[in-house]
Length: 110
Picture 1: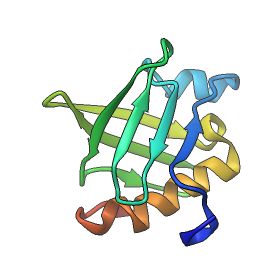
Picture 2: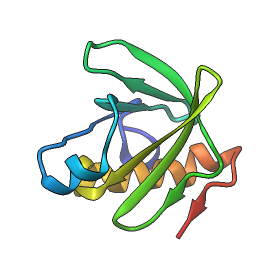
Picture 3: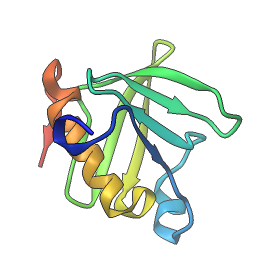
């Protein structure tokens, strides 16, 4: 455990078991790997990971996160309701976006 009481890197699996998560959380990303230095890696169902850059147009709300990121030179979006990460995972992602990722970005926090 270290800063913010988290063990780094944080791995947040994306669950699509609830109807809301299946409806809103589209795409093939199966988990997020968050690093203390603000780096983000996306894990795909086949197990491979790719580094992505969080974009400053990411929006954070208490029950929903619009994660905007750049991967291979293209902009992508991932809509993450709390149901997709669970309450603890969603809170950890919000804290990470606010403290780690936003250190060099202007991430909008509502």
